[in-house]
Image 1 (cartoon, rainbow, N blue to C red):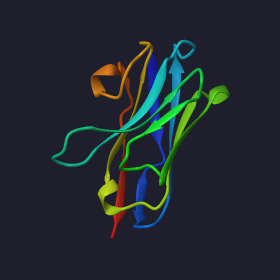
Image 2 (image 1 turned 45 degrees about the vertical axis):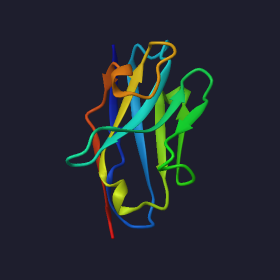
Image 3 (image 1 turned 180 degrees about the vertical axis):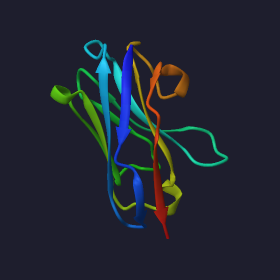
Length: 124
């Protein structure tokens, strides 16, 4: 089992920045990947970015490329989502998720462990 706790959400004006953190505990040594999803009211959960735990390779959704970066601190078992140039359409609850399953893609069903979510609100 892996436990995930997100932090860092809040209210920010358009053009501003936030950094989300996701701290993992439990069976972290064999994690394959950690990801960020987001879900806005009335919309489906959307992939934001992923990082392969062992190699540190990253992938970002087209909608956030050039504005968001994803990184990890292996010693702290923590993944970060740095969000710059925020837009009102980035408003959502942001979720961190993890999996041990190798070869997992970017769909929500690929991930077994989820955090409670953190609200990000971008005002115009």
